[in-house]
Length: 169
Image 1: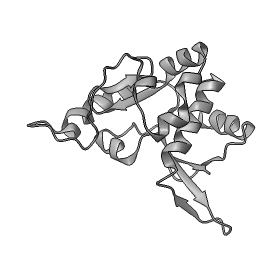
Image 2: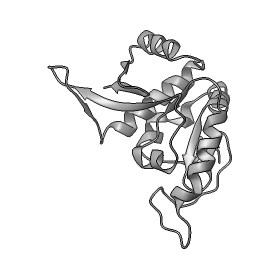
Image 3: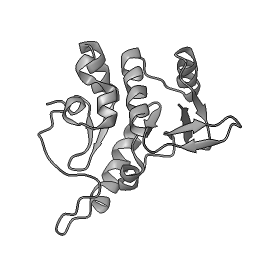
Image 4: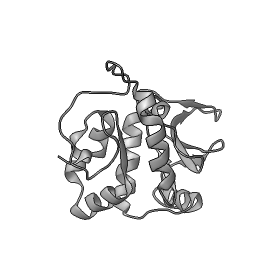
């Protein structure tokens, strides 16, 4: 089945792929890459068999870090336009995104403005955010375009540090 439907978990439950229109699925297939521990980067529309392997799986004689680091870097370097990295830290370690990409960090903000990275709600927030991007069906070439779009949707997406965007929930 398509990768967008194959994978499960909190992020994919929030993404709710079964309710995305055919236009949205085409957009996702053209713009969303999913980091598979078995296959590397796959398009949201790539057909994927069922399997059980994660970022921390141990295989005899094979290091997933060694296996994927260079190929992921090469594939991501060929992507044009804005690259948003919604992967978990453990998958980022398997192959960092290029310097021109933006890592999305999910944070909460207290009354004093202090931000704390979230663990439990991180994946859900990223799934909801990815869904909004897919439903909008508009790719962004610049960070300014993305931030303006987010503001228009009442999504708190803000510049944090170099290469990092805070998704404030």
